Image (cartoon, rainbow, N blue to C red; front, side, top):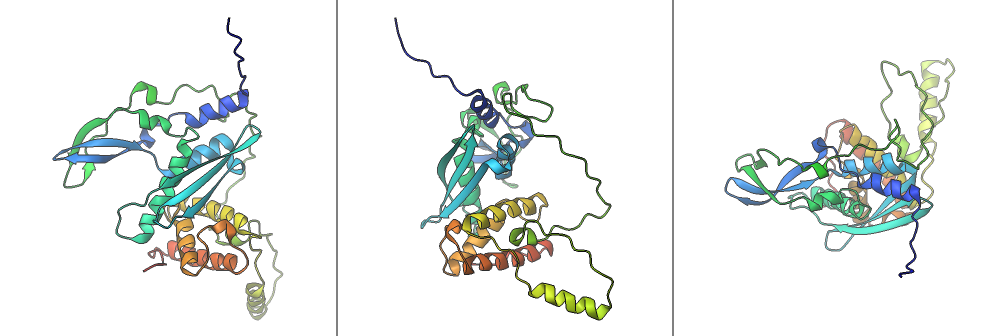
Amino acid sequence: MSTEATMTRDPRVVALTAALADPFEPRDVKFKPQMVKNNRCLAMAYVDARLIQDRLDDVLGVEHWEDVYEILPDGSVMCKLRCKIGDNWITKTDVGSPSEQPDLGDRLKAAFSDALKRAAVKFGIGRYLYRLSAAWVDYDPVKKQIVQPPPLPAWALPKAKSLSAKGTPTGVAAPAPKKEVQKSDAPPKPSIDTVSHHAATPKVEPVTTDVAKTEAAKGDAAKPTNLPTNGQELHRRLREYDAKLASQKLCPVGALLAHVTQAGVKAGYTANMVEWTGPAIQFAVDVVREFDQNARQGKPEPRTAA
C-alpha cells in the first residue's frame, strides 16, 4: 500500500490562482491573423495588456503586484512580474519581442506589452488561450483584418464564479465597502503632479490682490516637489500614472513607461529604471511632464531616438 504523502494547499492560494486563470469575457478576447492565404487566415486569440493589469488589480489588489522591465540589447524587453500569492511574494520572468512597426517607439511599446502578457501567463492569466484549437476564418485582404472572429468553446467562457458580490475569491477576505463620494459637475483634471507628489495637501488661499497672487504663484513654482526617493518608487509611480493616462485614452498602455525609459537611455542612464537615482529621477519627472502636456494637447509623442 502506498504511503505517499499528500500536500495540502492553502485554500487562499487555490482561490487566488483559480481567479487569476479564469477566462476573460468573450468581448475582451481579440483575434489577429497569424498566417494568411488569399482570403483565409489562421486566427490567433489574444487580450490587451490593460486586461492583464485589471485582472491583477481585481484579484490581488494594486498593492500586491509589481512589474519591472529591462530593455535588452537586441531590442526585446524583459519583464519581472512579482505577485503576492497568499503569504509569499513570487516572481515570474519572461521576454517580449518588438513588433514590426516602422516607428522605434511603437516597436518598444509592443515589446513591453508582450513581456507583461508572457510573464502573466506563468501565473495562469490567459494561459487557456494557448489551448484553443487552430481556426481558419475569412480574411479581408484589403482591410487586412478578420471578417468574423471564431466562436469560443464552452470551456473557454467564464464559469459561474463562487465569488462575493464584490468579486472576491472564496477564502479571501473581502475589502471594506467604499464610501460614496459625491462628485461635482466639473471634476478637476488629473495632474502630472501625481508622479512627483502623490498626495498634495489642498491649500486655502487668502483673499489677496492680483499682484500678491502672481508673486505667490511664482514662489510656489520655485519650490521643489516631493520627488520619488529611489528608482523603485519612481517606477511604481510611473506605472500608476501610465495606467491613469491609458484609462483616459490619452496614450496606449505602457507608452509612458517606454517613452521615459527610452529617453533615459538616450540621456546616458541605465535601461533599468529601478536603478535610477538623483538627477535621473528629476530627469524622469521632467520627461513625464512634457509627455503629459503633449498627450493632453493631442500632439504626437516626443521622439527620443533617431
